[in-house]
Image (cartoon, rainbow, N blue to C red; front, side, top):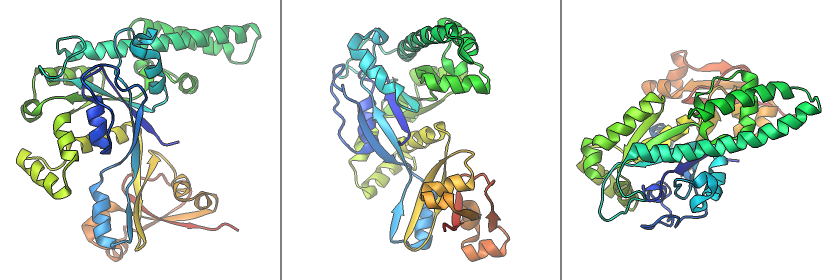
Length: 365
């Protein structure tokens, strides 16, 4: 199953507009809450200038980027954890994603109503995160009931899990998110089974107008300070501008960006940050038939990376021939990389690095 990033926030903060711009598809968007009931899902290529450079060097028949999946989840409101605004349905969609893109409104407009009348990004963040927190507490209390029964049956590890649940419930009850909970490796394995909403990595997206995008504003600065205190990151975008860019041809888009003095759409940074948030890296395979980017978890071994290409490659893995994109770019050719001693042979224990270019040697008898 592909890794997913869920786009969340209050109604009318620009989630569906961002999703549309991300995927160049049409997510239903309107100026009233709860118009998007079923989650929209889109597979988005991860923009990577290294892939473009490799394609120019090898001139392959096909160029294939790596991708990430975004899920547009309808707006949450106060009381969502109790079902307000169809909240339970929406929260179940969030439970299934691997990371969260929290869109926060940082602009004022008489044309787009705010569900709570006044623009206040910190209040909006706290409303959404409180609902996620309350849902997590409900999940933990249900799990606690199961573990109590396991303790009565004297099942193995039941007491240890109960102690974890007691500490975790106390932590969340004090208003702290699960992300900040200190845990051992064993406790981390249990917590992964709970699928806690506030334990998912988060990226804040400050959605502003064109003026705010050019010069920032007080609301964006508030979100940045909030995120910094929580060791999270913020990307500032103008969703209306990004939606307009998504409709342009490549040539028109470049001209538009030059007028703003920027090199790429802000959503490219959102995609890359979301990709990093999931702990993912990119490696490449190259040749005349195809230049392709592949996704693996940071820390993956060479056989695990080979398995992404084909299961036989992992099963029959012998070695990986490796060069790094930075060396190839600097030296200009594979031959030059070899002559400089930068072309390597790596075995099964090698940890693949972001930007590696791999040739897999394998044998399946």
